[in-house]
Length: 205
Image 1: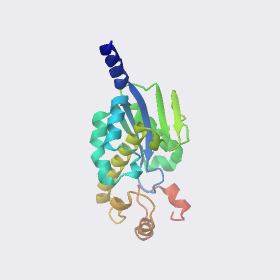
Image 2: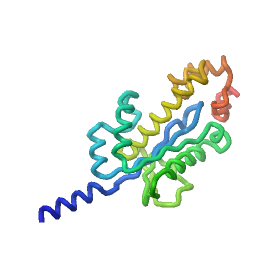
Image 3: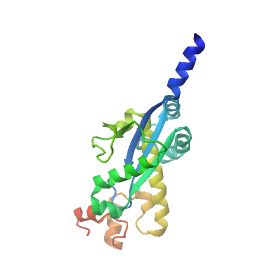
């Protein structure tokens, strides 16, 4: 009887309980928007909680980097997608963000039966069950894990792009429109990775 209960508990723990999606870089003025999806079992969700997985914005860059390999190791599956600055300018940020999410989902080995998305906006192209969770990265470990995967992946790209697009401190501002970044745009001009649709609002185009 006890063996049966232990076996049932193990099945519950090994069952996929969450498929979480989050994006990063939506408000930046330079570079792509990134999305990540992470699939977790109940057991590994609890393990990652113990490791300190929470919303990426509440973690230091060093802590996020330390957690990334643990998340990738313990996830049943994961995917990363992005949408370029050109696509953002052509399609608008919402459609481009949805595109990055769909690209991340397409990298999963199996289509999930249900996904949970951080924020209030529906993923309109997704033909399946979805739940939108406001502040989902605070409430669901799979979404928090996805936020870390997306954030670290995008930050690493920004650090690499700094070598090609020097003079904008991309490694520091990660493509966001800080006062310093805007002053460099005024001084050095706009690159092909700047989002012209965003900069028009600041009268920089």
